[in-house]
Image (tube, rainbow, N blue to C red):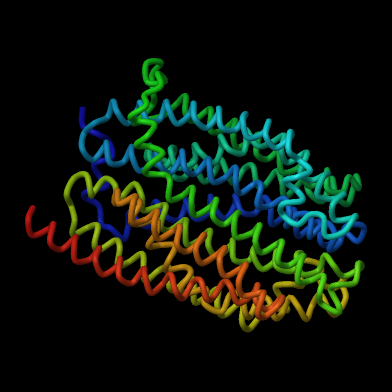
Length: 467
C-alpha cells in the first residue's frame, strides 16, 4: 500500500513549509499562551501582583519538565513515522504511534505522582522561598497545575503525531480550543470569583482537558497511521528509536529547566545582596521580571520551533526517499526565516520594552520594577537572532536523523553554557551577570553551529552526487 504522504516528496518545498509550519507555529504559540495568559491576568490582579507573577515564574519550569517528556515522545514519533513512511514501512509507523500513546499516558501519571509527593522541595528548588507570600502563591498554583499534568502531556505528545498523519490543521485546532477556554475562564476565575492562583490554574487545566479529549477523538479517526490493537504491543526497539529521535526536543526543554533553576536561585541569592531588592517588599521583583522576559522569549521561540518542527515530517520523508536536493533547499529557507523572526524579536526587545512590560501589570508596581525590567529586556535578549538560528539548527539535524549531533549541540548550549554562565557570571557582575549569561551562551553556541551548518550543506551535496 502506497503512503498517502507521497506529496511530501513532490510538492514545492516552500508550499509544504507553509502548509506544515504555520499550523505548528500557531499550535506552539497557543500552547505558550497557557502560562503567559495566566501571568498577564495574575500580574494585573491587584491582590496578586508581582507576588503571583513570581510564583508563576517558579512553577513554570515544572510545567516545562512535563512538556519536555511529552515532546520527546511526540517529536520522536513524528520523525520516526515520517522516515518510515518515506521508506514505505507503514506498519512500523503505526506501531510507533501505538507505543507513543502508551508512553505519554504512563509518563503523565508517574510525573503527577512525583510532583504531589515532592511539592515543597520542588518549589524551593526553583526559588519559591524568596519571601513568604511568593511561597504561598507558588504552593497554591503548583497543586492545581499538577492535577492537569497527565492531560497536558498527552495533548502535547499527540500534537506532532497528528501532524505526522498529515493533518496539521487539526493539531492546531485542538491546541487552540484549549487555549481559548483558558483565556475565557482566567478573568472569570481571577477577577470575578477572586479565586487567585487557584483560579488561574483551574482555567489552564480545563483547557488542557479539552485538548486531550480532541486528541483522543482524532486518534480514533486517523487517516494514514491509525494504530490497530496489535500496534499497542510494547516494542523495545521502536520505543528506543522514537525516544532517540526525540531526545533533542527533550534536552532543549529539560536543559532550559536546569538553566531556570540556576537563574532563579542566582536571582534570589544576589538579589538579597542588592541594596534595593534585598528589602523584603522588593525581593520578588527580579524573579518576576526575568519571568516576564522569558515569556516574551518563549513567544519568539515558539515561532522558531514551530517553523523547524513543522518541517520535521517533510525532512524525514525526503531523507527517507533520498530527495536530498529538497532537504538542502528547505534548510536554506528555514535558516533565513528563523533569522528574520529573531530580527523582529530584537527590535521589540531593544526598542519597545516599556510597552511589553506594561502588558504584565507594570503600572501597579514600583519604579524599581520598571527600571530592572527595561534593563533585563535589552541585555538578556540582545543576541536573540543567534538564539533563533541555533534552535533551528538543533531541530533540523534531529529531523535528518542526526540525533547525536543535534543532542550534543543542544546540551552544550543549554547545560554547559546556559547553566554554567548563569552560575559563573553573577559572581563577578552580581544581578547583571544573570542577564549577561543569555547572550554569551548564544554567541558561543552560534560559533559551533556554523561549523555544523557548513558540514550539513557539504554532506547533502555529496550524498546527492552519489545517489
